[in-house]
Length: 194
Image (cartoon, helix red, strand yellow):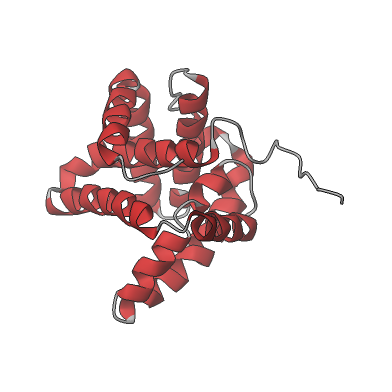
């Protein structure tokens, strides 16, 4: 389960990054070029996140080519970007706190979408995970790690090449720690009949 042991997760993220430095850096460069062009940016990002999650689960190297090879993620990536992005931006404009709360509530939505869920289903499931945990402090601490990585890349522009793969790997470990090593999409729903 995702917890506040961020020191261990940071170490695992760093080890994963070092083991996959070539694939992650090349994939991140493709993502950054995609964001410069705008249209493929969310698609490349979701593809690389999906590849990072799969690599973390399977213990195989990250393939940077997966950043642009997964054609089926284009509409899903834009749907998630707009469905999450617009409310979060509005929340940050309304005194910051609503934006932070929405970011925490939808913390797992990108990973759930990368794991095969539809955007709105991913956002709803992320909210269920957040409510089920009753531990907003763990989400806040992990979210703050991502904020620090973003702040470093904002302060020192070239660091974005390092902060993007570290962010994706950290997100992948937060997600796999929460839902386990098995894809949540592949699990059948079980009903208890009394």
